[in-house]
Each structure stands twice: as C-alpha cells, then as structure tokens.
Length: 408
Image (tube, rainbow, N blue to C red; front, side, top):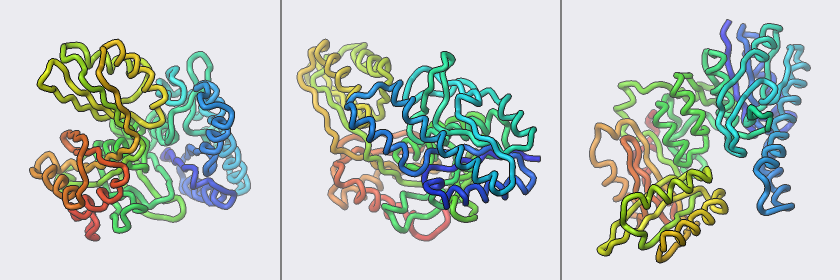
C-alpha cells in the first residue's frame, strides 16, 4: 500500500460542488489501495477577504493577530472536506496544522517549518482514515499559531510527503500543469511535461504562481517527486523531479513576470568596506527579503545601490532604509513601485551562449528600457517599467519559440 499526499488549492474547494468533486477524487485514490493524506487551502478568496476585514480596522495589523485570523480559513475547508468524504461512506478525519505537530520558527506571517511530528497522522491512517490537514499553518514550540506565507499550503504538502515518506506529492490546482508562461497572459503558452527542481524554483521565485518556492526547496532537498495537476479533470500534469540529461536540450523552459516588487535606490553611499553589509544586515534583521541588488561605483568616493523588495514589505522596509540612509549620510533615497521583473529560466542555458543577447534584443524590439539585470547559471532577469511587463513577457516567449506547439 502506497502513501500519497494530495494538496488542493482554494479555487479547487471554492464552493460545495467543488468540495464534493475533490472528495470523489480523494476517495478514488483511497479505493485504489492507497493511504491518502490531503492538504487543503482556505475556500476560494477567504484569505483575501480576511485580510480586507483586518485592513478595515487597522493599516498596521499585528502579525501575531493576523496569523490567528488567517489560520481560521483552512479550518473551515478541512472540516467541510471531511464531511463530504463521510457522505461517500469513507472514513476521514480533519486536523489543523498545530494538531498534527507542524512546528515552525517564531516569524509570524511567513514562518519556516522546523519539524513535523507524524505520530497523530500515522495513527489516524492506521485506523483507516483519509487524513485531512489544514495547509499554510503551524505552531511555535511556545504554542503560538503561525502561518507560512501566501501559497504555504504547497509547503505543508511537500513537508508532509517528506516526513511521511510518501510515494509522491500531488499539487492540484485550476490549471493543467506548469506552462512555459502564464497562459492567462500568453494564450499560446505550452504545458511542460517534466521540469527540474532548479527550474521551477527559479520560476516560482520569479513570479510564476503555480508553486510556492519554499515547497520546491524541500522537494529538491529530499527528492520528493511532485506532480502538478488540474483538480477538475484527469490529466498527466507536470512532473517536478531531478535534472536529467534530456532537459539540457531545451535552452529556455519558461518565462515569468513578477509585478509585486518595488525598487529602492540609495544615491551617493560611502564607498568603503562594510557599508553594503550594514544596509542588508539591518534589512535581514527585520526579516525583509531582498531580491535583486545592483551597485554602481561613481567617479567620486561614493556608490549608488539599488535593490528590490516585495511591495507588501515596503511598509517595514522603508523605515529601516531611511534610518540607515540617515546614519550613512546618503545623499538621496528613492522608491519606485511602478516596476516589473521579467525572467527567462532553463537548465539548457548552461551550455548555450547568446541567451541574454536574444532576450535584450526582444525587449529592444518593443522599445522597452532595462533598469536592472540579474543573472545566474539558469536564469536572466530584467527590471523594467511596470506598464510594459505583459508586452515584454509575450515578446520574449515568442523569441524563444515557446509557443510553437512543440512539447517542451
């Protein structure tokens, strides 16, 4: 008997009809002779609705109280799914993240999983239950409720698959798998049959919304096979797995667009050792994630430093940056929220030259100016004007022939 972990996102359980459809799929997997652990997100737009409620009360909500609030969404969905499975005459039991021993660090709203105690889940499975676990949440060792950040149910599912030594983890969503670009923005985007952990990790961190990046990190570290499939019908989906020789034949696997970042620039920063370390150490202490960093030395004894952060962390980042700028006697500080980041990803880039030139040429054809550039072994990212993001995505996708109908 194999153990399979299945995760269903908010759109998959948005209403009673969809919950019942998920229940039938879960029961089908159980009746095929498998033990099943299901991870569920909050119903539909529940999380967004709860955030809106909080924002109507305060513009600076306590992160601890936000975790208390947002964790209630998944508690509703796991109970409803358990009831739907009971109606199909199959045993099922629902748990919150804290109830099954998902232990996290103390960083509210984006906690990291430290440990998973599988005793309660294994006992429930042994008793013949389908086990349903609330995604996105856990608790600290001090019994404080925490959440894992948006999309954190993916992380819950992969972490449970690893802890339970599952055969594989299935991530069910409202699309057929992982595509060469967001099919809502690029209509001729193609479904990818197989992709490496490194590629999807880059795509997830660069704006592709199919998978939570930290869930891929766990999958890669512990070699958990992950399938991304459509919850509304049967289909092969996309397999996320270890890199193979065959993958290197594909130069670019996907193109991603991120529109949720802002660019901060500090002008005339003192050009001496330790200054950059001081700036980014203070941001790290405030638990603020920094993405792209560009430093440009001027003709004087100073330098300009630009970096990007997520827009939803600007309210925390700017006070830290302003105070640091004041201490360093920085001449000028700017913040630009009207930026977008477009990126290409592919393990084949390691062995093919000229990828950057082709990407820059595609942007030039559309008269799109590049503000920042960042590269890695399998990725090239450009920060551009926010209003040109979708144009850039389509032109780059076309440049690399990703919409030709050819299987990637």
